[in-house]
Length: 299
Length: 299
Image 1 (tube, rainbow over the protein chains, first blue to last red):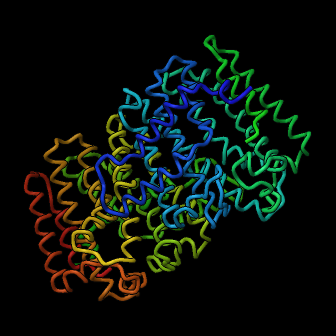
Image 2: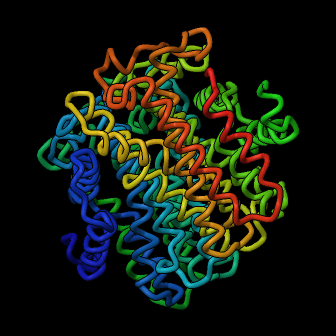
Image 3: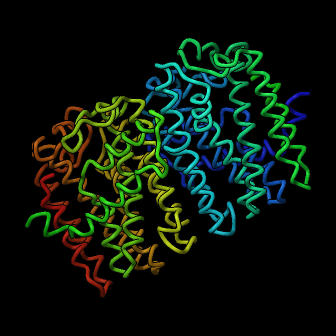
């Protein structure tokens, strides 16, 4: 099964098209600093990538019959946050990565200052997108999206997880520490991506909990397969240097569980994720396919 | 006239108290990474400072009779953005400043990675504050605050201004370039601070324009007096190294207009700022006092 069978091309095109629109300055600009900052933001945000997070928002929103006009926008806001986090994580002061998705990272293509500012700009733009009436006609829904994304991305979520990750490089960790770290660093954003579908539909708490738990299991499985790829993948297929976790002495699920144990754990999590979808009477296949894809991904 | 005559101590106490509350994690934390990120955010955001921006929000909101419960929160969100911008601007990759408000900057007190993440966390928290129902009962007002702050702080505003500033270090600039740069780098946030007062009151467009123009003139005057202090101030009074602009070859208003010309321009701008307040029948004295203070400030 190729990725074409898993990801609906029309949804991916909508996501790419909207990201391009969102990162086009409203008024023509001539000042070289403004040209440069928009250029750097576009360089990182329009450089491909799986678009897993916005895709999850759209697929979750589809469960509730939400207009894709809204779900694509809400998902793209999350993708902007994801892109900002990659730029900052790749900086020399953090993970010091030169390559991302097969291209030089932002601070290599530009410089550290531009990369920091491009990240700041993308994060800020994410909230502008969510607050816009184009994202949902009900302002109450929009403030929920802003609150929930801020909680997932901030110091008690993704930013806190990255801080833990940096400290973890210097110490030995237990399985539950690695799980907490990953639940914050990558899990929080993946979970809010799915919950956005429910918020856009003003769905009931049970349904929102179901997509949230689906995403929590999926996100953890995704991280485990990421760790497995770091051990067994090639730079050509992953588009980024491999073997970095061991070189950085970062504790991973493969260290803790072994390769076979990590595979088994990921498979179990995907099984649990799919179970969560039983409460929906609408088409759950798009989300199921993503869950199964996570187990078999090569990049 | 001392600062006690200009700034109402009760408002300043409310601002300090709320910033402290906002940066206290909701649940007790034990993971060392989370302790560190909150510690770093608090280090920079609770280290004093004039609190000019939130004070302007409260004083502007007072013109319209807005409850201070709302205006202090909205103003503190802007202060969080201001604090994040200082942390990132001070980084070695940007202005490379070791001292701010008389204390070691974040990357000196912690390290570059922590400083980047603390800035990211503060920026994200600002939007969480604005989206919260505690900031205003009407969700439509809250989405306006989020949209307007994002526009002021993002790539077409403050972040774009900082990018221009970094590029400007390497070239010669004209007066209008310096004015555009400052209108984005510092002006946008000061203007939105005053407009927030109007948005919270759902004021008419004319009144919002009046406080916006007041703030635009005030902000430019503030930057000019900042440039003057960089030439004539002392490190002891300003709490940061002086003479940096010349060392960095940054174009300033003092370069362009001379010291006397810069003084004159600042005085004229403050005059224009005060004129904008003529349309209000409520007490304009708090804003007038700030405007006059800007001209005479020593730090």
